Each structure stands twice: as C-alpha cells, then as structure tokens.
Image (tube, rainbow, N blue to C red; front, side, top):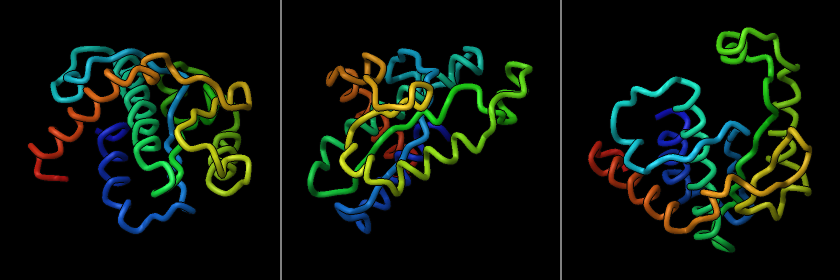
Length: 163
C-alpha cells in the first residue's frame, strides 16, 4: 500500500493542481522484482524484501505510464533510486549494516525536484547507484504489463472507494 498504491492515489488527486512545470518525484529502488498485477490486491506470503522489490517495480511502472500519458499536459514524473543501502532503519534491521549517509538520498531527491538536469526527465528512471539516468527494470518497458498494473490499481481504488 505505502510503496505503490498510496503514492499513485496521492499523485492522481494532485493532478488537478499540478502544472506542466510541476514535478512528481517517486522514491523507487534498485531492488525491483517482477510481479503479477493481481499480487497488489491480495495478501502475500512472500518475504518482506520480495514484497518491497515488487512494490518498487510497480511504482516505477506506473510512474513511467503516468508520465507518458501526461506528456506536455501535466507534471514531469520520474522514479528515482536514491542509492542502495542508505543508513535507514529498514536497511539496518533487514541487512544488519549501518549503510551510507542518508543525506546522499535526500540530496538526489532534492536534485530531482529542483535541478535543470531533471527538467525533462519525464518517464525516466534515475539510478543514484551509478549517478545517472538508466534503463528501468525490463518489465517497466512492457506496455501490456504496465496496462494491467494500472488497471489493477484503478480497480483497487474503486473497490476501496478511494479514487
């Protein structure tokens, strides 16, 4: 919910006030894993790290889809991997490592929100592990998978009366 559905709903609700000069910066991850759209609407028995990776791919997929559908008439939408193994509570608990300075992630998100480098990044994926725009997970480039994902998101929101 938190990694995929909530940001989708929030972004959709904000679209009426966002202009073509606005930016939506979605916090993705290098940890991405293929998913079936219906996995979003059912309880999972998978590990937390697997669910996390699937949710981050879903976020990257809908970000790209929304960006392409709004091209020229809405905000710039970009998915950003802030850097792997930043020193967050999640990294410390899941992997038992201190991780890198979280300021690295904060800095790249500020850069995405404000810098000229990101002004025309609509629909792209930025990988701060390598410090540049990169190809997203291959599933994010498959329109049929993305269409199923977005349809499932819409169905979930309609069922929950949240849209």
